[in-house]
Length: 509
Image (tube, rainbow, N blue to C red):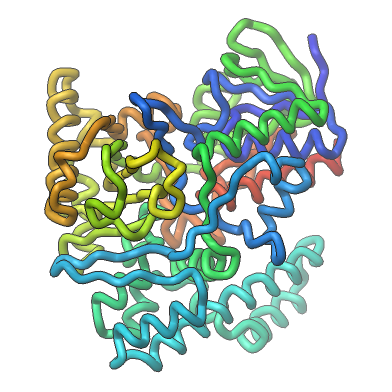
């Protein structure tokens, strides 16, 4: 029986970062992954001469070499910065409206404000005030988090009274907007629905329509992508996660691919080890699960071992949305078909909340359509003279789970045909340049990620299940979680959250 300080289950973004941080701090750590490659959503696959990125749209928190962001500093600690060719994306995104017009947002606050004021002159003052609120909100959030980290123990009556009366005075923007939805805030500032759509595009990164999407997350997305710049990397996100995995081994950790965990071993109600798929038992002082709490409790423990407190704790949380995605390789450059921005959000109407309801339907008729083409920013990400397009919509899995195998394949390719038809309308000539195409449905995500419902963002990222209410608390001693199921989803936030979890554990073991 092998003994470790920490066992990590799952080599997704959070699992990799947790293992790397523990290894960096000299802890004896072992990481288990059932797949033959690391990364989870952060990986790639090949069709013909194209290598397709599975999930990454934009990497946040990187900053620049001159002004590094927290993620760049984290990767520097792992010793992987020079192993990766980073691509800084110059525009945040482009929003295309149903009338054929659109607006692109530069990845710079001053340029973004100036451009929006030019495009929407009637709302120029509101635009300036809105960006001030976004930045004030994020500054106050950071200050409040830093102050809270200094506090220890349960607050007494006096401290609670001071917080209740003093909080709105010290953090006025945070107090006013912390629990508001994106739609509520946009309605407060703007009348033009096009401007609202232009500013709220990041709702699709969390899988929530503006009326349910927390403004707190939108504000932070806007702030971080504007200040630390969106990034991509040559070779897809697989290169990043491969580098982290190799860093784990280089720093003394152990990684076991093609070897999943069959069950968690409990003694006196506390986690003390795991048994892998081959029946080999390992012991450790702490266990970090990078898979969903639902799967952790439901598949790695016997029903009688799951605390009732865990069932009650997770009861209010709803499994989030999945996706329907077409991975397309074109035999032409982006310019030949009119692609000019690497990330676009395309609308069928000016009502994103109404269009989002199609996410519950089987086929992608009116859903907002997300399309990325990183060949725009760096032609070397695909073979010379070609383009890689990833286009898709957010979809819940329920309707797909009802299909027979025969119906599934018919609907899968019909869904792909409809997405291509919508792209053809926006980019005439698109279809005739398709060389390779693969389609992923919610069932595809369910199969490869082993996530309930094929969820790509964990639990629903709405106001009652995210921000201040993430289900990060473990109900089993010595077991911790580190994934997008228990924190804000996304590559950057997952890496950083897992780094924090691992650093805390490293100080304890």
